Image (cartoon, rainbow, N blue to C red; front, side, top):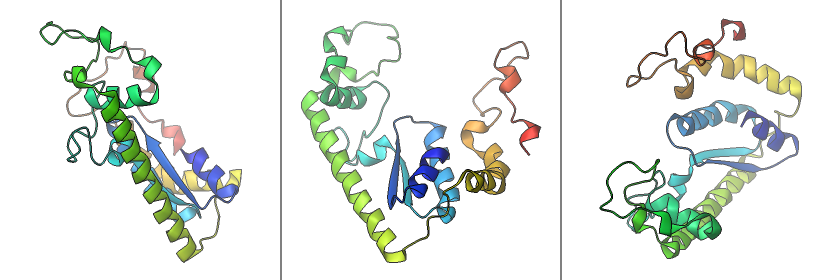
Length: 196
């Protein structure tokens, strides 16, 4: 994301929308990063998790805007890449057991609803893009994040001091068990003191 932001600024983009389809802490961190970087970037920035642009949601009333392999994501994928969706493989509702991350309501997926949600998201993103371009035109900001040196300076001055507070960089979340010392993940669990 940092590279995209500096690239957008160095080639003179007026706006950039950074969209993630991943939920959990990473989209919160992306928002935080954009907030931290915006004062140093001429391009107007906005970041969001995909479900924010799905403002009408599956039912059209603003509820059920995102899920994990449930009716929302399956419908969206079905609309965009129909060859990647085989609804005949969705287990019967009465079949017990876990089905490898399949959302409980995936059987309700609809290609037509997916097409409508894609249209809603395109509309939302288009409106946001126009808003960002309007803001750029109003304030006429300078493009200042344009060199490797600029990026390194902002990394050390702005990002590094707060990176340990990012949700995805926390050593452990409240709901997690500690990582065992013999785990291959243990060595990379802590943010290196050498970064500071």
